[in-house]
Length: 218
Length: 218
DNA sequence: CAAAAAATCCCCTGTACTGGGGATATATTT
DNA sequence: AAATATATCCCCAGTACAGGGGATTTTTTG
Image (cartoon, rainbow over all chains, first blue to last red; front, side, top):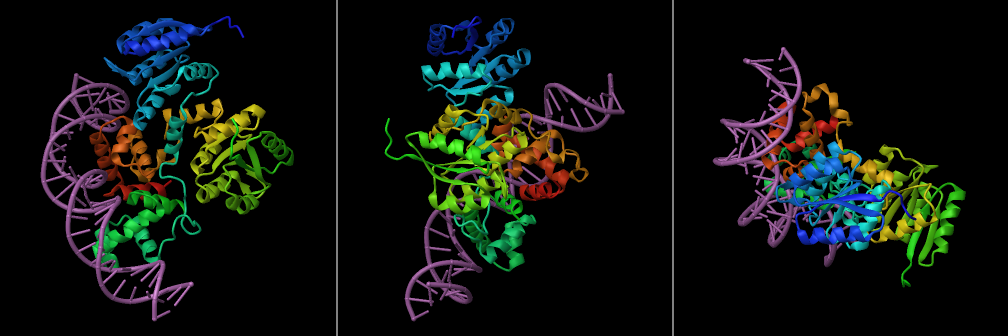
């Protein structure tokens, strides 16, 4: 399917080797057209806006700033340009920052030739190219205190004993551990023991998570 | 590539016509195996757990409940089973509920033969099949988060600033301070500063108390 | 009765949290 | 222009919490 208008692509990447590889991929694809290849943020913000490419492939770590900042600024100037982050980082924080900055896709650098070409085409179709791992992380963030909601009729999560339920209820009232101890006339250590079991059974790692889970399901 | 173990699939769909179409697609694919086809939620919750299929294709509108509830319950019992929502609804709320309930993918009913087969295979590879439109919506929700949420003008909340509200909301998801820092791209110290103000305004002395107050008032 | 579950207590290590000081840079409002 | 609010960052001290070992007694249950 010959296209009248090739997809114009800009690259922002400080590593010369990698920049070369990508530009080769772009050049080797008939309907792709490389319009510029920047080495740093300053250059990108100066060169790219007047070119208004269809796609920008953006590295995160740049010598004079972060690709995330660059993305934010570029998207403000060129809202219709698709920015795809291309990075080695799998850190969740980075990913969210990039998404918030307006990135339209997120590829890991270990991606192969085919993957990159496909991702760019998908981008133009309005899809959101992400590796499976990244998509999972994004999805998980929605169910952060993890699913697996309840206790009463949840066989996989052990049922709470009466004492544990009582203590959990006190947690929801904002009591701290030593207050619970004196309230129940037991030692602080015992409260700790119960908390450990409660966390284990609810599969959480803090009193706040435990309380949220409890309140959501009662 | 012949597979020794076919992918076992269950369908939950009240519309007989559609159920028929999907089961045909599944049956026509060599390495797929249909293990059951349920018409309602009650049946699904009874039949599916002992079968422990690899994949469940789940309709949202069921005669005796919602596919979202069904997903939640199934995922509790079968955390390793991939549940793919299959629906006509493009409503953002529905999508988020489904994701929170633990759905692993989200397909629109206008999807074609190929798309369905591909989605199931991607699911097994750990990817998250979503149509482009849905992925966009999910991503967008990160860009302008929280503002839509309820607490906005709660008088008892003592006028929290947008940032404070955002952070409080992250608390309710069980995030710890440094996770909030990385998600908001600010330092831990800043998170602490915000927390101090939040506690002061809500007149509480711990994150758990803050969360409880927030959840009770929303 | 014997085994299992529940409830109690103790030690210890490392990390997270609370709350007390600050400071600075933008915005917003007056 | 001055005052106020918001958002950001820093240091520090003391406490609380999370989770890893245990152990003992009572209660429940097969």
